[in-house]
Image 1: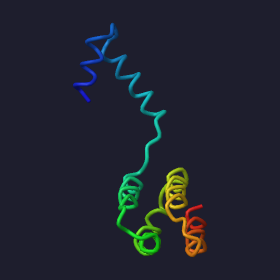
Image 2: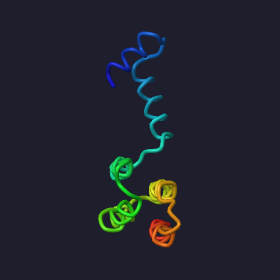
Image 3: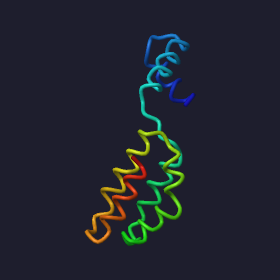
Length: 102
């Protein structure tokens, strides 16, 4: 980050502390997701796992941790699950997971 700030300062006519203040304000406007959500998205990205196995893994290993997240992050996780689990045979189980994340 320091290198990035130095690069910005080299091209801007702005005091260092003012730049830090601007960056701090921008940081507050950017959504921050919990590390567990990033781990969950990485886990979901495995292309070799069947939908049934993915759903079973969510229920067994992830659901409790996902439920502990903020509502915004739970909504993101639910969207990922909804987009990934599309099998008509698994709709009821998927919907149960989505309800648990709501």
